[in-house]
Image 1 (cartoon, rainbow, N blue to C red):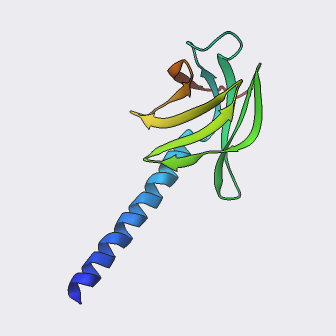
Image 2 (cartoon, one colour):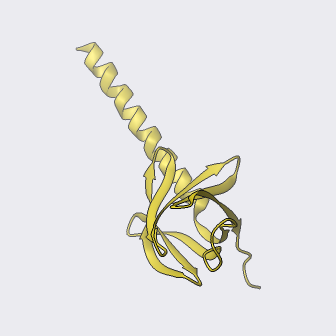
Length: 124
C-alpha cells in the first residue's frame, strides 16, 4: 500500500511540475513580437505576432502581407508551442524558449526554416 502512495505522490508531483513548466513557457512568450523567416519566399518573410491567453488557452494573432489569422491556438508539445497555419500551404510552426530567447521553426515544403523573434517595442 505504501508503494502505491509513493507512486501516486510521484505522479502528482510530476503533473504539477509539468503544469508549472507550461505556465512558465506560455508566460515567457506572451506579448507582441516581430517575426522574420529569412529563408521564406518574398512576401512570406515578415510578421507581427501577438501571443496571449484567451479563455485559458494560449493563442496568437499573426499578421503579414500573405497571412492574417486571429486567435490561432498554440498547443504545448514536449516543452514547445506548436500550431499549423495555412500560408499557401500548411505550415507547422514550433516556438520555444532557449537561453531566455524565443526561437522557432516553420516546417514547410522547403524544409524547416528558422524564425527569428524580436520583442516589439511599445509605442510611447
